[in-house]
Length: 633
Image (cartoon, rainbow, N blue to C red; front, side):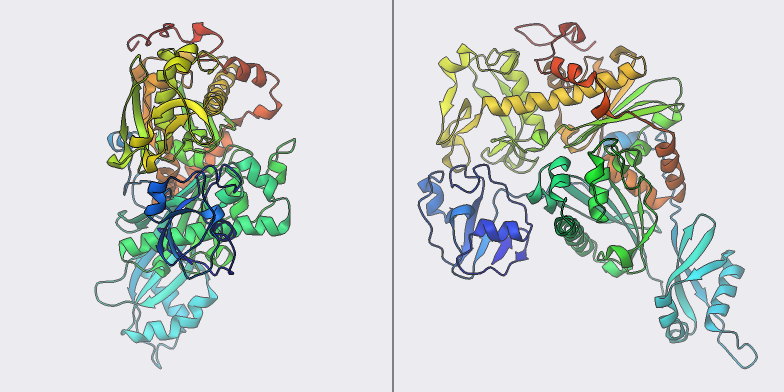
């Protein structure tokens, strides 16, 4: 069976359901009904082959006529090619995709100069002779010291195996690939060099709980030659880090999770290399950033103690590793660096991300940094001091746990407004019929429902909803966003009270963590001079609406800045300049970590934030009951 658009080929025993085959292969597919055929989440389209399945309660006739089926109810009895219409790779932009970063490149904390720790040096070795009968390695060492001032301290065995042939193939013209660790240099590779030379490349990768994004970079020019992104295949074994830690309790399952993330990264490397028209074997350096759990799972390290008091990881600083250990699709001698973590729930995605902010250049102001993904991490401070914590925000704003939730892909409503009758005006990514809402659309909808009186401060439907917009589909009752005739696949688009409760819990987790973090350093929100929002969720976020629901603090709107994927940007800065490695390690060393799991006041903060916008309305002075908040303060 071939699965598109992932282009995966599966060997499936006859009689196995398509859902079971996809799950066994670790490919991304969600189901909200446990395979009962009622939710429609596992919708597929048959491209080649024939199937016979039972009637599908959640599948309209219109879709069946177009060769759609439900994976959970469809057994395989033929060679099939299927298409996953609900899977869309996350949209990414080549290069530094953050407008803020481009505009403030000279003011960010990290260095943007190109000075990588992996270098290619072109040399011409004198040929051996009876008068100059030094070994090939000795002549190479001598020329490197003479021409570049580089003294080689170690050499890979694989390089020795090819050295003799390489130095004789093209009259002594060679390219030596070198790796610098502190003050010592290692010879990673040597190859005969043709006229014009050969390029070497590096890999920057953000290993997210939900999404993995990477880019391949020309290490000599600093140009990004290929990008790729996709769902982390571990998502089939849990949507958040807690569920994956629980799943990894057995060694075989831990190895499975390790293999799933390696497969994800390798697949993306192939895509990015193909886009850049390069060979993966020319990738000699890699820079990874991710939360502590993702790095533990990637390295096949037992993550159970991350969630058991006193919440201590196996390590925060990962030693530089050879690709012979990681077995990724790049040069076997490539070196991999991992941005250091601070604690069990504040990882290298945050320390790397801070390189992309001005925080570490200014001691006169106080900054707040928020990376609101499945795991929400926060940092407060400046050049003189930093404190950090993390909260389990959950996958709601990334589409998980919400019936109408989607990642920010084609078919997702990214912006929505309601009039007093509840009639929507929205924009859909890709301009298609709406399939659901992504994170920014959910924030908009929650704010609009509240302001127009369709839900109360607890997120419960009011009488206004019950009289005008309450609707029922095959399985759920909820606020009607769009009628079946205008929805994707002829299905009504609803948001239920359960969905709304999940969204409120997510926003409460983020706001309460921010509030408690500030209280631990004796600050209040009004003392924050600038608030930086990172992560894919914030790209289309309406700050005004985020404040209306109590997700973000009620500050002057000019204090908010969206940074983009700072984890990937930070990993790229680390890849391109060795100084950034030292700086990110200083960040991790100097940062104070607040463990919310042991904070007795956290539950009080969290409970208070389970209202719209909050229990304490004085926290939101621009909020006006029954109307929109005031203008920017």
